[in-house]
Length: 406
Ligand SMILES: *Cc1c(COP(=O)(O)O)cnc(C)c1O
Image (cartoon, rainbow, N blue to C red):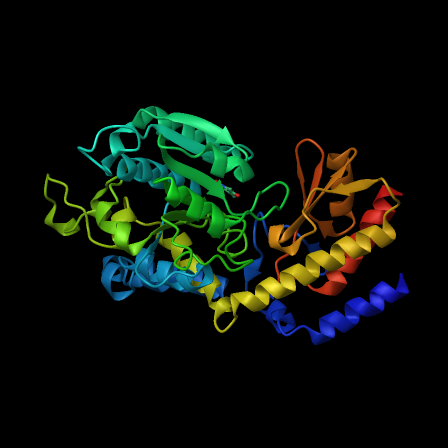
């Protein structure tokens, strides 16, 4: 035990990101639930106070211009862009992930059906009537994909992500995948799956909820078509903070939103009865943005200034490696089983341990100052946010887990 404790101290001393923890409001609890709700960045309360008291309280309606409220969805999208490997002008912030999944999947199917118009036969746009969805997806993505399929006259086929290449065909219109599986922490191969989808003539929609802010995504580099993600997990935007939608630049003119609102109109204040979509990322907007949450998110994103995502990824892997090592050393054999792949190329930033009576075990862990979460039916989930979790936290979490399991 003492060897792991001293190694944790050495790793913390050598950690170039260790200083970032001071930018968050934390106590001596080991917080391993940042993959569900990121911790509060210190800059946020004063910003929210200013937005409420000065921007809203004093400037009132003037703030739509003078405080940059109207353009916040694109401005904050551009702030998220480098974290997911996107050039500016392709991301808009707003609505929930669920709503953005809907926009993206329907728009992807519309693009696919529009392709090859007049060509006829299998593989033409009109013949594309299938949506593939990650069979192990977070439920909301599956529910929404099912509704999108009904609306667009498609059939929904749930498939394990690794089986997507063999399931693709001339009928495939769109594929909705998760970059990291929310339950097991498995990282899927975004470059090769996106490539396979493209070779089949279909469109790839990626859900980045469990990867953005934890590892490099490379949206532009890998030619992803559409992507969505939330901002309250590894991006620490706060409970219910708005999500984002990425539409690759060359696809923007063909992005036909199923939720065209006045905010996505080319001339929103023209108040025309006829809809004409805006150019660029704003085409993904719907209605009036949720300014309080959005500007809290903008303040939260400041902690990323000058933090390379590659360095965050290196620390994330070191944290999860060290956690697995400490668990193996401390926890009696057979009590837990890791569902998270051991290969780095297949691991996100969490460790999921299958365990008997996992719900009770997690309650006892939380009572002992180690906060992770429980996922039905038998999974203990531990998320490692490299910006504020240290190696000492990791060692302590494994030690308390071993004590809890007795
Ligand atoms: C967290 C998460 C969501 C959350 O969607 P909301 O609309 O914000 O509730 C959706 N999909 C995945 C994969 C998630 O991990």
